[in-house]
Image (cartoon, rainbow, N blue to C red; front, side, top):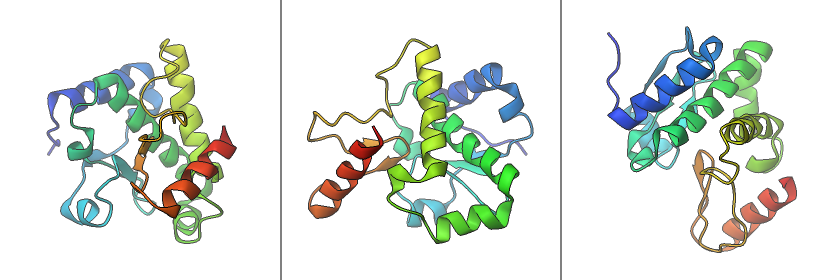
Amino acid sequence: MPHTFSPPVQSGIDILSKERPELVKGAKIRPMGWLGRTFLPQAKGVMNPLTGTVSLNEAQMAGDAPQDVADTVLHELTHRQQRERSGPLRSLMNIMTPQGPYGQRPDELEAFQAEADRRMQMGRPGAFGTPHFETPTQETYGDIRLPESGGRKRQALASLRAVR
């Protein structure tokens, strides 16, 4: 049975289906279940390393334009491609034993680069998902939200600045 998404989310999936049919065809994309929303409440999307299924958290996408949703779906489908290249066990190990800060992990760099390339092709280089370090209130970076205050946020921002 096909999953039902809100019109903006479905539009984002449809946009990416037309742009990158090879990525979307055969991919399982579904709404995020209660378990994902409980343990990863601030994630816009996740890719299950064991099954390759992409789950989208519509609550976190509220207000996003379809083009921004397409960016998020592309990010998660890039992780799905990584899983297909390296296998589910390696994909799971990358999550269980991360190598460095989130914004500096090779798998995240590749996924964020895919988003950035798409935005550039669409003429939207500074669109959603691009970190803006000049604005101290910037809390989101792609498919994650940074902690709102304290040393962890400063540490995360410093890590992301290093990537830039």
